[in-house]
Image (cartoon, rainbow, N blue to C red):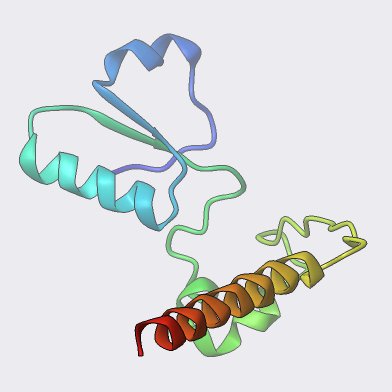
Length: 110
């Protein structure tokens, strides 16, 4: 395993599998491929700076200290006008509809 910040485009053809995203799923897929296909070359591409051997990311109690630093993308968000109201509306609508159907079925069957 190796990490690098420089990757020549000509090297892309020397890999059998390329996985974009080194999150939980990407790492599991890469690990399984490496385990079951040991003779294949696997490349995992992850955005941002390397956190390899960085003890700050391994200390889960201090994860808040990583916010605002070089490892934090700090993606801005846009306030949603309805927020969760539309989801709550549909939840209560279907819950009410389900209860009415159950009551009608019970009354008709009894």
